[in-house]
Length: 367
Image (cartoon, rainbow, N blue to C red; front, side, top):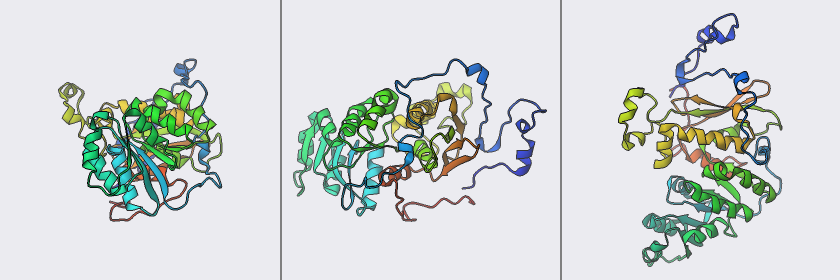
């Protein structure tokens, strides 16, 4: 898959490179949208949502701590939301890398059949099912299972999974504000967070960030865009970040004419052109509502002012996001639109784990 990039002739023709030409911004090939910031219009109305300003290039300026490793053998993980899109892809990674990761606890909502299969495969010590009415059904599904984990029902069970004493990292894959309590419980227990639940920061950022600092916990983003930013800031000194450029595919309705949108159905919104995700985030991507949430999340994760976070339409979803540094350099992270990639990085950081070319195709920019 070839990227749509500008040729030297096209670059030379861009009018904003010459202040004597028209001030209208050009429409660029490749689906990129350029926007000139009007500082006069925004001055004096800057939005500050944080009770306490987030630090530059959080988490911890992406600096790993020597001697932080506290486990032997494969890294022990808890997965909250194990039967959802993030959870199942996390377990795919664990299954492919049994020498790197192991599962100690799983929590799910109501998909008891899949949860039982996961228990038989990964043999966790603790399992939670949020829907308490399904506990007996889960026990029946595990009746012939040689390994029988402890089962705790309801919200309390999910919290216990999040703060399991053996877990080093907790993957938070629950959708919505239901993920806030278990994430807080995990932080208070000193667990690093592989954050796929963006509502944790959107709804609780002013509380969650100081709590993470207090307990010396890393919040590592599993969203593809925020993982890209996190990877781009590796090694940057404090204060080097000038601007964040979030990319967006445009979703299922990107090429629809405006007058046709009133005819859109849920089934249309679920046809994302690039990503295989859960239903809610796929619909939110189609309406671009998800991108607004990602702006808020980026503000809390990386300490950027809202005026310094911009959105760029990139239909191919190969560039997952970019950062501009103080010297006007732009750093980008590229990869296939596969959620396993950012999830894997949250689990392995600061290391990089070799992936098979059979199940993880390599990016070819010449195709």
